Length: 203
Ligand SMILES: [Zn+2]
Image: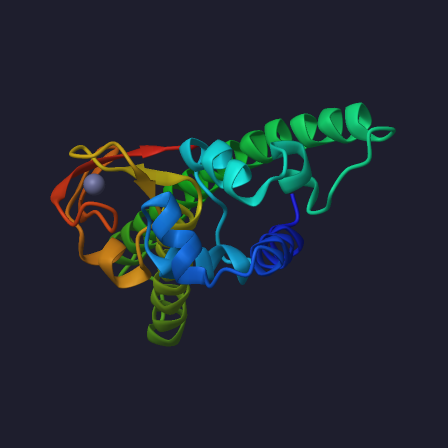
């Protein structure tokens, strides 16, 4: 799905109705920031908003996902393409998420291995080599941790335990949130409440 194109399309359809972002947001009971995010291509309406949004704009979900008004002739083909793309995206996300976890584990293991080697053979290995080994170990570790943090933040969503909405936390909010297995203590941007949010792959 081309978020930028879909965002532009939402903006076009909204302007055709003569509404501001705020007016559209009020109709959907959401903030105008959310509408602005969609229109800039930085986010996609969550599933529960798809139908109300399309109703307000007078378009179909198929139009929205295609980023244009689909003619009756192309309707079925586009609908099928959109469905396949959504499934592919979900799968790619899942794979990418698993990959970051593996990367994290590998970097942690190599970090520990290198440290053990340096400690065990501390009298055998000359100092410059030792320094290089420790530097390599730290770099591998840092890269691995960064990959995991980035992956965990960007891939998938967190589901608020209070209102059930899903969201992507900001980088720092994500890092500062206490993490427990697949849950993280975060502030929900929808209801403003803090709760143990569960990591989910789809909205
Ligand atoms: Zn919430």
